[in-house]
Image 1 (cartoon, rainbow, N blue to C red):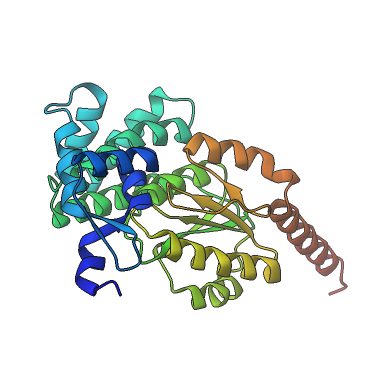
Image 2: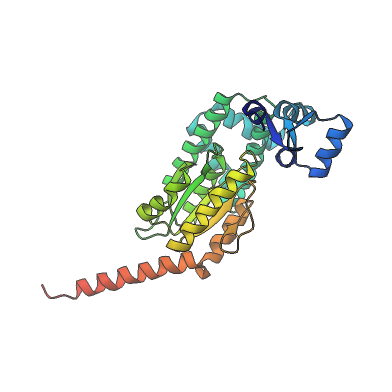
Length: 294
């Protein structure tokens, strides 16, 4: 039986491959050649030490960064929401859309993730960056007004996932497209997804998972999302680098341009049709009320 200590300090070969951006066969070759140190469970499965991953990531990172990436890292690491807002608005003026801006910032977020994996970014720094970006993006989004009966979207991660930076940028893409956003951040337990949908009545759920979250946990969460979506007819978007399984009734995106294109296509989707049906019903009801004799 795998001990808790081993479980906490190691990851599977598949998870190691995702974190390092290589194939499983490469991990196997590195272990066999001694590049990576691994242990075997009683069942014969390889477990790779997290410290080994951090060592490899640190060894392959550039010692210095320059240009736009370095500028964004400086802004984000300062941890000041209003400075982040100013930088976001300046970047948006140079881009065609918030989606383009978000993809630009995503490279800085990826570098922060590599720093965290390599042990070069402390937990408090990562959380400071997350909060500054969340608040800065929220300030920008608040300046984009939406209609009273705009379509609604809930943004959150899978349960136990702490990486919410991508959701902060997704809020900007949705706000620009005229959606009303419920930003929930770190995901609720899977048994709360259904009450969440019943209360907020979103037309779309955007759920993010990173490669840090174990595949089994992502699969369990996805199964509940699928069950709730089937009952409530809410649309589902699966985002991030997590181990999402292919799903016929869910949209899979890996970039903010993907998200923007999806929002263009949504008028022909169930989520948008549901919103349009509700809007038409409200207009009909409002018109009937106005014609009633006083």
